[in-house]
Image (cartoon, rainbow, N blue to C red; front, side):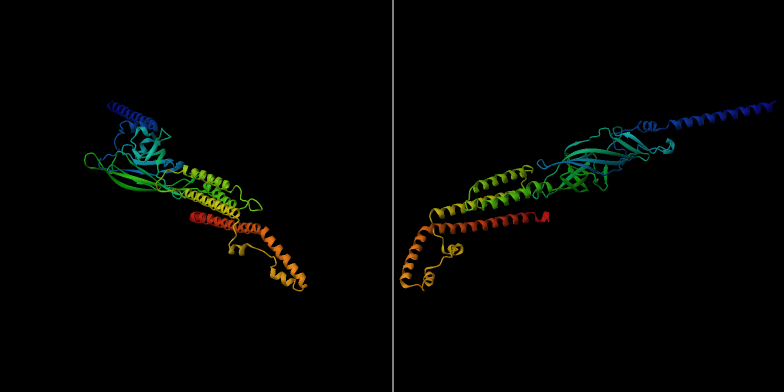
Length: 435
């Protein structure tokens, strides 16, 4: 009977342990089923403090990796010397308090947590006029080993001093200064990855040439007589202007307007060499060039460096037009005075521009030397009278024709001179940019 009781007691104890094991396995299975992403986030944030650096050792330096990308160049404001760009600003670091074992959490290796619930580096762009984040509710990607990554989307309005001396063939270099606002170099260090510009990032007026980064350590004096040492990253954005619009709208019209105006200034308006409306044509050209010059300077900042290249070209074209008008007025005035005073052309002018083919008196005598003497004397007398009469009647007309030919050649020479000068000025100023 004792052995029967022992046997029953053994079976009871064995059944109890089996039941306990089954219950324990059921609890474990139930616990594993409950270990989902929601429970993991609650577990990680239950005792999390987001207002200090997430390092277990205070002397440790927290490394923050940054890799900004220019999504789009929104606007370049030359007058205010500002540029507006849309940046993707990924940042990653290690949080010692956001770690777990994936085996204990059904193999979960990555979760998404709102960035407002965890510690975020206070990276700041110092030389910005205005900084906004279009996406307000950012989320952080957290990995089981504590690596945290956040993509910031920033619309940044930067100050960028413009160098416009070579406008519209100018290249601008804008600096973006980034760093931690609060944490010094012994607390946060930046790991700078290679920056790049996506191919889809295009602007109708500007080309992005390069976007490079340089890390520097800077000391700033504090109010206690010491120094605060910060790590800063300087991103240099190089932009090149697309000049086609300004070439087609300003450069070529300016050249053609001045060229046509100079040709018109030294071209007679009639077969008799009349020069009417020359001054009006010159004044119209100068007014046009003044309007074009105002268009150019209206888009540029009022810089102390000097006048932009295109503005200087338009100004030179304006000066060429003024000089051409003055020369044309002088020619008109001189021509009118010569005719009014009935001035006799100088000998060299007479020789160059006289095409008289009339026979001289000696040639007439030789032609009539074979005639009878009385007839020859009579004909000689008649020819002398006729010659004297023609000299008296046609002297003024001859001078007018010679002066007309002289000033016509002067018009042609000055027209060629101003045309060549205009071409040489244009070629000299834009040779290195166009060719």
